[in-house]
Length: 427
Ligand code: AMP
Ligand code: GLY
Image 1: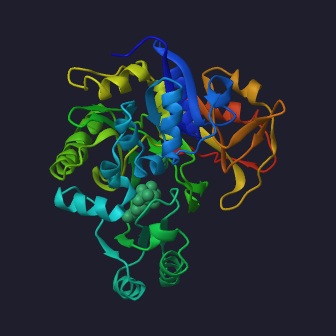
Image 2: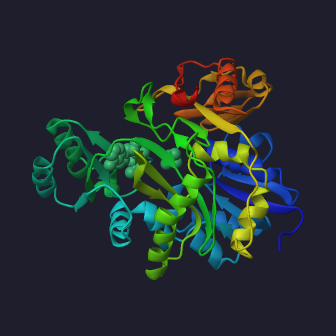
Image 3: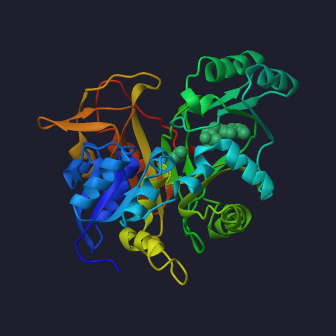
């Protein structure tokens, strides 16, 4: 069982990991929180440990030396590298999927084939490893077309191509120039789907499942959903009109069948299973399955969760989720992600961030840091996504007003954020 004063290790350095560490730190069972490698925000209340998420051997050694009781992981590449398998071997409790189960995210061809077998609605697709064959197939298909690198590419390996020229350029970049390295040697060509994106999160112990409220990320960098896709730059949760009825139906349609299909392949999924849905006229398809918490979805979820996150995740690993539930606060949570101009392309680092304290002091606000470092008494930018301004309130409109009011108090050179997060739900 969970001990008092348990030392916890959180793996990752984004705002998602800041948010998870922050919520875990509020547990009555939490001892010292360590974050590897962490950021300028996590050093405020946790110990940052200078080890990268995929440096698994060193993470395990650190955990053994620091009496870590429980490990929580953020990023996909750590799961794909087998972080869970390594901690299991070391007999240290960890929440998340094994390397084999994480393939549902780390290989899009694995995931799409699984969806096809389990009869889960998804866009029509073909897998290619040969450039000429891919190009010949693409020329036969109606536009727009979606071209995806098979492997992990920091959320940037998906190209929506509206012209034949864009298709050729995408195939060139991935298969010939190898922009995503080995991740792009195999690619998927997929039918373009229209509609509204909804994120679903399900915590599973391999058998029983706890559903989170719905949420909505915003992917493109530009207002009105224009420009290239980012890793995610704004979120609202729950999404009005997508209540518990919708979530329970999504469980039956896209979580239960995939859990069975995974189990049939000997890859029981434990952890957070997060499908992205494309919804149109009440019907939907799965865009992809992620094997982890969403970023920025997690930043909103920790603000809504009433239950003790450490107890919830530990329960999943020890006793399981049968006869268990999570308590959620009423109302809504939103997050506006402040980035460095240029992201998702190149951007400057090392710019001084001001106004954080004033912003954090506003009603209903919590700031979660992503690409920041704390140096000589100052916070500096250190990444594309820099700060998440999260707000809660009784309505989406009120939560957005709070978040944007706080965001205005923050400033740094080349600061940018979308002003239209949740715009269609502002009412
Ligand atoms: P994925 O990593 O597969 O979820 O793709 C990243 C983003 O690209 C999604 O969140 C969507 O915004 C977009 N996308 C992916 N696949 C499609 C598709 N078939 N049709 C339209 N948009 C898509
Ligand atoms: N919300 C986008 C992602 O976590 O992949």
